[in-house]
Length: 113
Image 1 (cartoon, rainbow, N blue to C red):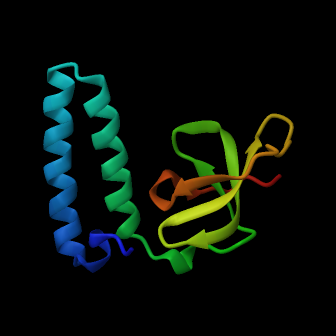
Image 2 (cartoon, one colour):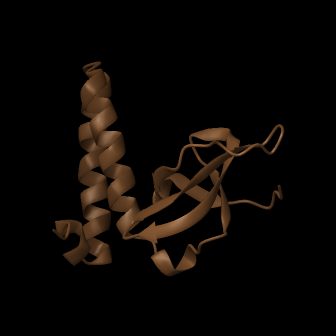
């Protein structure tokens, strides 16, 4: 089943991000931890639909925004999700478990492993 965000224009996606940011702000004011996590994840999802999946290729290595001690090597792209392995920057060791990351959770890096 296709996600409804897939049909949104860039402008509609941006408007959705703004709505979700307002909801996130309200949840933070009310200290609703579960809602904070849900809205944060939804924002990342919508932002992922604003990116071009063709800019992410198998073999590419990105920094994980929320985990600055780790890099992420892409094995496969599926929609707005990159599948691959976390790599610890300290020793370059790859995690044995394959993981999925939303594209918006990754950013370009100049670091090599």
